[in-house]
Every structure is written in C-alpha cells, then in structure tokens.
Length: 274
View: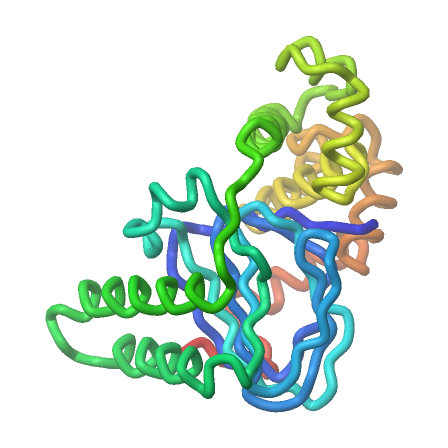
C-alpha cells in the first residue's frame, strides 16, 4: 500500500474542499472531515467507510487514513493539533473511539453546526478568539466522542506502536530493518512485522519510504538540489529515490522542484483555507 507521512506543523488548519482523493497518509494531529454534500469512500485504520452528506469521520493521531473516491463533494476538512483536545488527554491515554464515523441521522447537524461556529470564530476580531476556538474544540471533541463511543485501548500494543513510530521518525535517515528495530526496542522481529502488517497496514520499507520522501520534499522546498535531498533523507541511490518519489507523489523529484519554484505559496483552486 502506498502511504505518505505528513509532517504537519502544530497549527490548526481548516478548509472547505471540493475534492477528497488522497492516498493513505498519517500525521500526529486529528483529522476531521464533515461532508456538506456528495459522498466519498474513506479508509481509517484499515477499515473502509462510505461517507454521505451530513456524515463526519475522525482519524486519530498517527492512524493511517485516506480517501479513494468522491462524488460531487463539498466538505469541511480540519487538521487539529493534539493541544486542542487537551481536556481529554487523560481519557485518550487509555481509550480511543469505538467507531471513527458519526452518521448524519445520529447527530442531526449538531457537529456541522459546531464546525461552522469554529469557522465563524476564526474570522472574528475578538481579542479572545484563540481562547474561544479552544473552547469550541473542547465542546466539539466532547460531542464527537459521545457519538462515536469510546473503548479501552490495548495499552501494550498501543505503546509498542508509538515506540516503533517514534524510533522510525528519529532514525529514518539511517539504515533500518526488522533486526535493527528488534535490537533497539527489545521486541521480537515477528511481533514488529505483525504490528506493521496488521495494525499499521503497511510494510516497513513503504513506511520508511514515506518518511524519507516527506523529508526529501522539505529539503527541496528549502532549496536543496534533488541529489542533496535524496541523500539527506536517507536514500542510498538516486535511482531508488526517483522510483519511490514517483510512486508516492506521482511526479519526479525534478518536476516537484520545478513546481515548487513556479507555484511557491500558491493555494490550489479546489480548496479554500477558512
């Protein structure tokens, strides 16, 4: 499975979207999508859902998710740093959502109205806007968790997943194998393989590749050459880098560099940052 790691800045991002086709990806923030119109197919943590107008879905931090088809979509898409759910930190240490999807008939526009209130508050000139937004998210997450229900996490596997992800994030520029992870984290190779295949739903090489491509893109955006970006990200050959970059991004590194140069800070026509 192709995936991408997104190194999101710790900033709230909220868009209205007219397209929701993204390859599977993950990041350290909550991702909330609320459909205003149309429908889309979504995968969250290996489960597949069809979302229709009025439905809401939430992908928890570091959960692989993606969108595979949309049909005349209008949607709110929110990338929400963990700090906006600070009131639920203790709960989320031991629990996760029982289901990531809330259907329209369950909440009768309640969640959509809360998101619209957040949009209005972001546009407010109030000197207390930041505090008001935090309060809105406290209410929104409380309502979402009430509708999704919460189930107790399997603490040990969840902790192992966090350790695996953290180690890869810190060391992806180095050579990493199942043996490397097993030795560094004192976990058996077979269990690490099980976590990647059955919990993260991605192979170790593809997982590392997504981290390295994300770093290579950052390097290119900062002005590095394609060769400099490849080696800084941990690739041992330009050929492998080019092949993996095209697989993840759908373009060559040189085309990506050219695009970044020509469209620096441009906002695509299909999304509006609100």
